[in-house]
Length: 87
Image 1 (cartoon, helix red, strand yellow):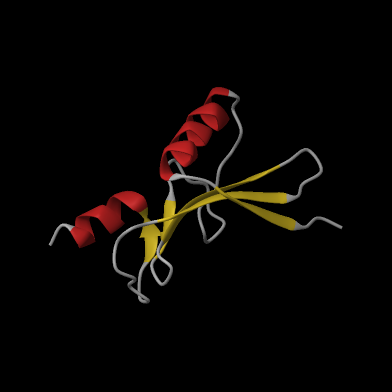
Image 2: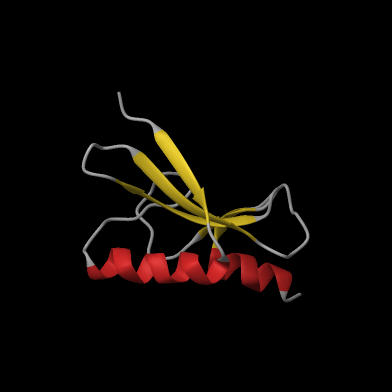
């Protein structure tokens, strides 16, 4: 039965992992399960993350806690999170 595993990483490690996944042609998804080209953000933590599947179809996640103030109403892309927090 497939399971979900999350790995806490630094923000820099998260970015490097995304590059490596891209180089290997591994599909990535955001918090809602849709294919993603960038990190997704869950605002209540707040955290940035990326999800992907291993060969056994387990869901794997690299997650990094963000320094900004939590926003419980936000779930979206990292670029939208940055725009929101620049106001």
